[in-house]
Length: 331
Image 1: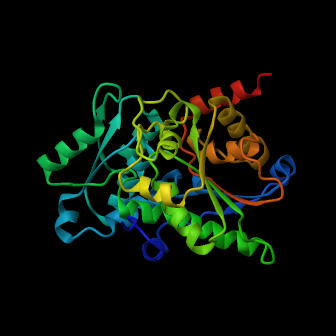
Image 2: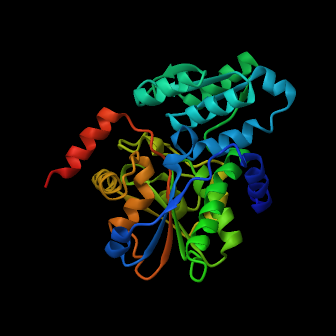
């Protein structure tokens, strides 16, 4: 059975996003290279519009709406970054948006979503089903539901991040810039599925590794079992990876193209946030640190390799950010 997307979909998404999404920088760090014995290339999607890679998939999806769909607008459910992405993309494309968000989402993400002009509908993530609520509201209002990861246009849009990273790594080192490994954070699988399609097309021998929080390793379990595993809402500071299962569209791509999925602890995420702040002068949210933590904390052995690392987002409440950095400073 064919996968939900192929590389042509990612190329088409890149064309739609050209001049709209930021071509975010890819940074290197001698300190990180010395620590790991590898050459690391950090794709800084924390510097993307609205602060995360999610803008890519959201805009790619909404840009393909019919005139009738644009009139009614888009609805989404999200813990934060997809919410802001849909809200901003809808504003840019001149359509209404409504977002179903958990009550305990970071206040900064809720306020930013409202700031982009979207209606925010709050729910309790521990007692209510956000997907069912989103479908109900979409039916009542005639809006088009765009899920945060399990949608081919979203997946293709996210894959443009890996396409750019591979191009930028080559430009930084034309003689040796081909990546050996691509490391990507994993929630529901939209980012890693798109990135895996791009990587395996452009660099067939490149290993693609996903990273989940220890408390929420549903995709790792799913790969081991060969079918989608459902878990309870994980208790982790990586709020963008508090998904309970992979998607019906994303999992087949992950199963076919992703080489492995590993996990990191919340403590490792905090130390990685501190590394980005101190050494690279970057504000990165906990979820955005997943891939980097696996490399910098030695979960993945990458010595002698050229490694692409997706830094997925930087939307974190500043008070909470300060608390976590102070926590990471304690011996």
